[in-house]
Length: 102
Image (cartoon, rainbow, N blue to C red; front, side, top):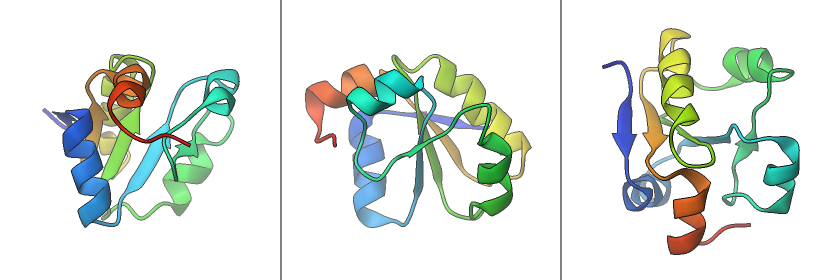
């Protein structure tokens, strides 16, 4: 597998301990209604910019609504050269139940 699935708690631990890139792949309205602090909203319109500008050596943590779409996105980003791509199980819905959001 080209990416790893992690829990919300594992994601939070990584964010606290490491410099990571955190991306949200939900739609604009959902992102605007609430998101994980310091996340970058990635859309079809800006994905190429993220790929070309982000540090591919830093861990990349991706979340969506429930943790399904982020798996495909994590695989995609890994194939685009990101060395460590992680999909958050449960997505934002799980995250907002357990952890701090913006």
